[in-house]
Amino acid sequence: MAFVIILYLGLIVFLIASLWKVFEKAGHPGWAAIVPFYNIYILTQIAGKPTWWMILFFIPIANIVAAIIVWHGVSLNFGKDAGFTVGLVLLGIVFIPILGFGDAKYIGNKPFNSDDDLLDQDLLES
Image (cartoon, helix red, strand yellow):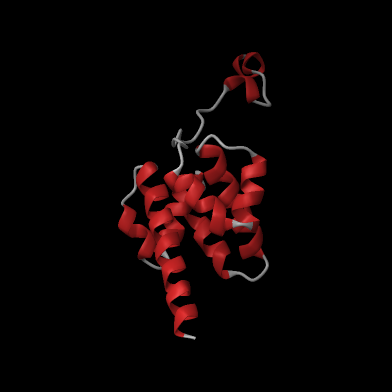
């Protein structure tokens, strides 16, 4: 029984260190990984979501959807694709350390591309 507890605590320390590295790569303080609620705030910032998204994490069912969307934003802002998001959601124990200790670089929120605008700029000027 003591072996299981030690193994479990070691895993927790490893995941905290991984999230610490993810936060540092994104330019946020690493210690934020161990502060409850503040780590959710930092994750939403890394994902490029507004601060009010923290409220969604306290609403049943909506918190699952919000977590998936936030992890997808984190994944995209580190230059990864939707497949990596699936890994973060289903196997976070493996993919968070890959993000933290791997060669992934934080590229930040992608700037707005005017080509993606639904309204044509010429229509707005006339």
